[in-house]
Image 1 (cartoon, rainbow, N blue to C red):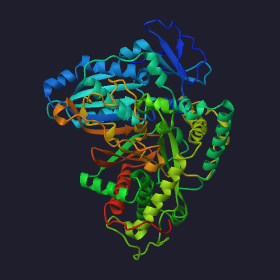
Image 2 (cartoon, rainbow, N blue to C red):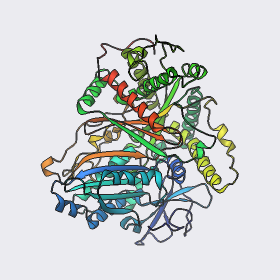
Image 3 (cartoon, helix red, strand yellow):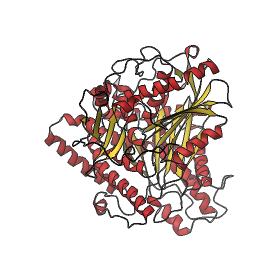
Image 4 (cartoon, helix red, strand yellow):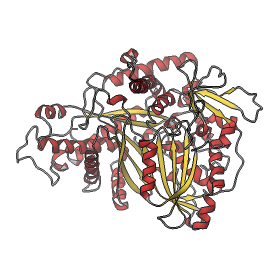
Length: 619
């Protein structure tokens, strides 16, 4: 297997690079008329934070796995997934989305990190970038996924995005597994859907004319450079950023107390690369429809309910352990008086420059996220510290949901989360608050990566004293867990390909894009929190006309140290829960138990007897 050279992994540069900013691409080296032009720009702050993730053993890298069928059978499948056609398709994607073919490079000042794009590299492939083959079982595909994000995450780490296509010998003729791996610095959840949709669309269609590289680079900018406030005067921008920083620090200061699921950790866990594990729970179609219908009736999104679902699952998980004597009374008394703090990513696309959105920016493959925090009051513990036989227990050993929190009070907590999310998304300084957050995240991740490298070499750990003054969160703050909701992705990830002529999301056609499409993937908040709701339907290819169709898909994330991250989404009508954890600190048994509790909480609060009228009462 080919190994990257020292000049291809971003550790050095053969040409002098001018001073770079995140706001524009700069020609480097050869004249602009050269057939092998090179361009560079500095990473934005969010991108830079994920650069340090990636050099920390590939942390946060993403893998998307698709099972697809070619209705024409084995012969048509062989033509579609021939080396020539797959190579053509991947080259077209890199030329249209040049960040896929870029590399990240630390500059001579040891602070600035740059994206470097070589025009020639966009039309060629490096070793390990495109892989074709056969697979005789699902176990082989699963083993590849684990190799990419757990066993050998740094393999070909100089390549920003890779594609794999395997003919499935254990499935009907014309069935393939297609996998994409991408650095999080150039992708996010929306980008994953865009990557798959575009790949399958281009794969199934004849070649087309691509726009000039300069035009595509102009779209590949960080969120920092696309804030609508960039059009304001410099003085007003500085004022807004100053107030945004104060607002961010005030919010962090309110995050006091908290607790999380019991875990194993040491003083080195923070800089020990995670061992990723994932758990998936899928609701059937009837359950999914009932749950989402219940959400609509009560005017909440499932994304707003997820923190409360998690809290109730964790509540039963902890009750079970306390009743078995596995938690001390002191620990229990502390936990039942603490709030719970959750947080997760926000899709920033709807709040960025409208001209960029109309030009197609809403569907660019790039990193366009910020984060939100939300808090819940203490977990329901109506029986205090009692362990006697009078405490009701379900068959699994924990008090049933009806004994802990009524449906009305559950909905009251969901609406509390919705209010917090709407307040975050509607804040007039949303871009400035996002900007204020990132220096803390960049430096924290740089410290973790630096300490990991120092520990491997047996060297003293470098100090980062400035971190103390950058975060206003109290010393007793404990983060309960991450949550994410991508909603129903079917609008931007159709099942049948190629996309019909004139489809607004096909890169094979030049057109302006409806900015409302950028709201897809923003299910965490209520629809009213978005500028406008996304269109619910776009043109589709019929099953009879399909050259290729998606029959299954899954997403895998290389977890962070101590991570406990609950995601959800809707795939082909099925609501799914997926948990990503660091198996160094969380056991699989605990993870499976928690996900089962989440499943049962969803079924009890949304899939069973309905709640009449508005929710009232104490939280």
